[in-house]
Every structure is written in structure tokens, then in C-alpha cells.
Amino acid sequence: MSSHTPNRARVIPLRPVPAPREPLWRDIVGDVLRRERVAQQRTLKDVAEAARISVPYLSEVERGRKEASSEVLAAAARSLGLGLGDVLSLAQQELARHSASSRRSPVRASLGEVRLAA
Image 1 (cartoon, helix red, strand yellow):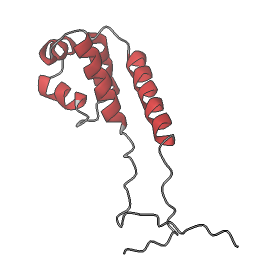
Image 2: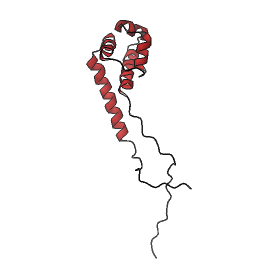
Image 3: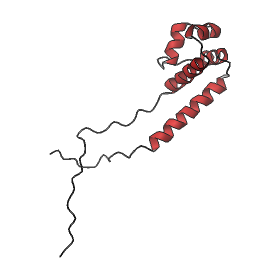
Image 4: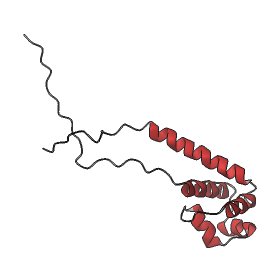
């Protein structure tokens, strides 16, 4: 008798699974600013006034909609009792965490793989 292993079909989705989106620097920096502001229980208005920037602009920066200049980031950081280096360091740590978690995600199928739909 020969040993026979039954064939098992692998189901592969017809549409490729999109790769996780690489975060943008402005998204990460905005998240850091918002987290720090919320941790201090301060309002957008309070921080914006202390930084001498408009409330709508700070809101856009926090949501990653605007790419703030280093001067604006430094002013926002100072208004939160931080230095620009502190904000950038926190953002770098967040980016490193994201990179580490994306490397642990399952490897996607190579582009040369043939996929059949039943």
C-alpha cells in the first residue's frame, strides 16, 4: 500500500489583500500632539492660544491634515511644556512601534503566484 495524503485546497481571495498603509509623519506627529494635549486635559483653544496659532490650524495638524513647519511644531510643543525634540522623539518611537508590528504581519503571496477561482 502506498501512503496517500489527500489534496487540500487552499482558498485564496480573488482580490489581493492590501498591504497596511505606511503611516505618514504628519499623522504620527499629530497623534503625539493630541495625546499630550488630552493627557494634560487641555483644550485645543488653550494650546493654540499659548502657541500663538489658530485653533482650526492646530486641529488640522492634530488630525494629520496639515504638514506643520518646524516653527509651528516647536510652538505647539512649548505650549504643552515639551521641546521640539521631545515631540519628535515620541513620534519616532510611535513610528518604530508601527514598523515592528507591520514586520510581524503575515507575509503576502508573491506576485508570481497563480490563483484560480472555483
